[in-house]
Length: 461
Image (cartoon, rainbow, N blue to C red; front, side, top):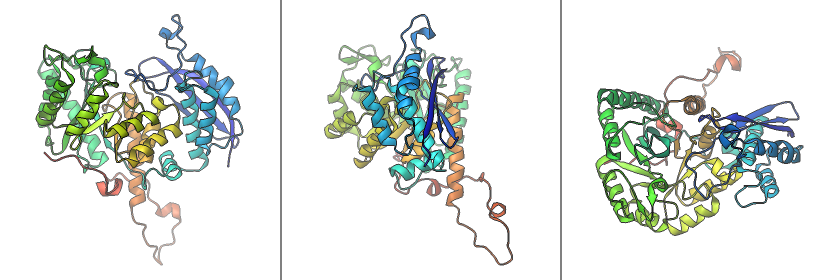
């Protein structure tokens, strides 16, 4: 097996025009890989801490030269000669070198940059696609699958223009719809929303992730716009497509209550649960992410007990892809689904630990991008390799989002080809393997070809 010969990092820009890290790793056989680290806008206060320079005279105070230097002079040199397939051992070495609980000394962004590069290098040296290497090496799913996509259509909160409180208004295709058809649905509805907004004379500019940020009076109007747009297509609402919402409730939590534009008085936690139940009844919102502030654990427990049997209550800021926080939530029955963001954890092996625990407790796993994304498609392979039920990569807009959907199209073609039965050779056919093996097919696979039979379907209403 090849060993690590050199690791080198540099500062680059993410999709928001803010600095992040690019890391290259070379093996002693001459092969090399490169990876980049996304960064978030809405950060949970318990997630691993990225290291920023805090120099007000450079890069708006957001530079990452300190983290880059930590890779080039501290972390990287200590890993020369290591076997990249020893992911867990190498990740632990870096965690030990940092020595802090939240990876704040050397930077979670510095540690994750190397961790991701090591995983890519191991896949390369094993001559396997990244998703296939993850599946075979870590055994978190019996088969690689294309997860169901959660597509953001409209943005508010910190991702929008502060005109809406809810951070993301999402559509979710039924799970019996294959990925290629799902992407077609997302593109169709996304463009129809633009048409509807223009027709109504509303602002149709886009937000941080590429979702629309219309000038609406309240959050309910956004759901109405999406439903009107769906009905203007060939898709049937609450049959072909459902709705979800990333509430990011910490952003509208004030003095123990929740302030939304939908009514003049602040919501108590019980009021907010009633509001979420009304969204489920009126708009078939069965996916609710971060419905409460991360420390409001009593409300998390109450909503999960109330509607968790028919809804996904998804922990993001509550869990921050952290093993201890996830254990606590499982024991307290605070939610039933987890959002996975590698940069919240800081190492790839740490992410796998969290996913394993979630799967053992029958939680739904959702792999997510970050608002400060790059064109790196690492999370697409990660989601497929661990058998995540869902992915959240944003709208079908903006290069950093589209790159991940395009990567899924490639993976989908490969999985479709692998699922095809091999043709039996005939006595009259003496062609070489390269002549008889078709290239990646353009056919659309059925759900049974690309997903496991046990994958959950959306609720029928």
